[in-house]
Picture 1 (cartoon, rainbow, N blue to C red):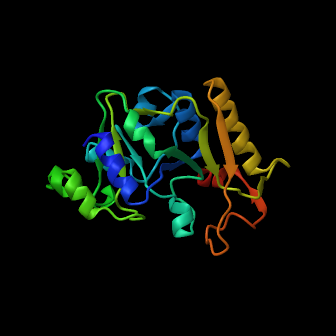
Picture 2 (cartoon, rainbow, N blue to C red):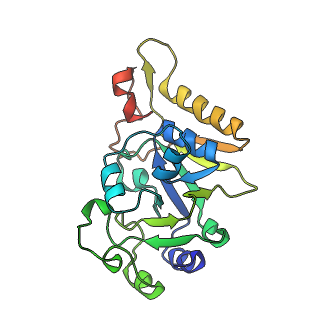
Length: 230
């Protein structure tokens, strides 16, 4: 579908932004590429990215070069930590209106972890604007907005800072007095500076009933557990 068609329907449903969560390492690579990038695009650029449990399925189902986003902030809505990482990029929905030529926008009917061999495209994606309008509900975690581009990169909107929400972990490294959140902010800011990007990095303000186990806790953080954040 065209980006403008998907934009209109998502806006009708109450979506205001496209969200993508990832690790600090992968997010720094996005900043270096100046946009959200597919797993394949980061690999092709020989930049670092954190392994994900879905990597094998992404290759198997031919979505290794696609960019996955969500219409809601899953951490906030589900009141739990996003397993893909603590760094949340929030892009204005209007970015779908300004896509370069050659971009396609799809919306999944279900999360690819539940896809099966033998399915056709219409089993996995909404086939038309009418189907999407009838089948999309605000907050449905399984319905991902997928951007497909030849180079696998969705550029950050020009003329405005990149908006990032970072989980506010209160842990410190075991061999340092520096906090994990502080180190993460520094890495993200340095990556943005090198790419000559303006960024707004905001600490996450969790709801009182959030079960993420990040805010309000203190303790040590060693290299063996760093994958949860970095």
